[in-house]
Amino acid sequence: MTNNAVSEVEIRERIETLLDGIRSGDLGALKTVFAPNLVSFDVEAPLRHLGAEKKLQNWEQAFTIYRPPLGYEIRDLTVLVDGNLAVTYAVNRLSGTLPDGTESGMWVRWTAAWQRVDGTWQIVHDQASVPMYFPDGRAATDLTP
Image (tube, rainbow, N blue to C red; front, side, top):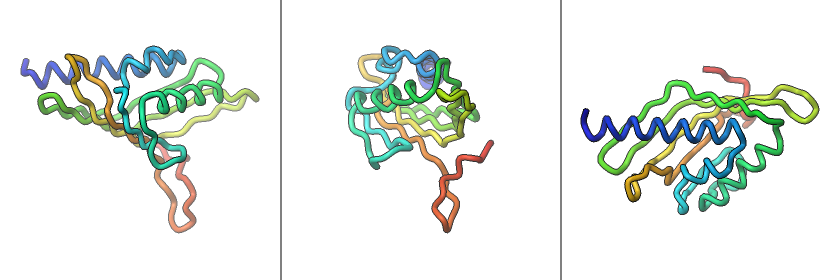
C-alpha cells in the first residue's frame, strides 16, 4: 500500500471520529479533528469563522437545537491525498428532532482541507454550503442527492 493510500485510510478513520462526535454530541471528539487555526466557511453567518473554538461553538449550538442523538450521513465521499495535504468532499445530511418533536434535516455540500501535523490528520479548512435558488436567493434546503 502506498503512503497516500495509507493516509487515505487514516483520514477516513478521522472522518469516522468526526461522525461519532457529531452523532453523540461529543465536543471533545470533534476537538481532536479540527486544527486550532481552522478556517471554516460554515452555513451560518459570518462569511468566515476563525479557529477551532468557533467551529466547536457552532456544533454546540447545533447540539442544543436538536434533541440527541443527531443524524449525520455522508454520501459520495472522495479523499485526495498528496503527501501531508489532503482534500475531502462529499454531500452530507444533518438531521434530527427539534424540541417540539418536528423532524428536521438538510443536505449540504462539504469540502475539507486536511494537513498531517505531528503524524495526525487535522482539518485546517472546511466549507459547508447550501445551494441557492436564483433569482430569489432562497436556500435550496429541499434538495437530495
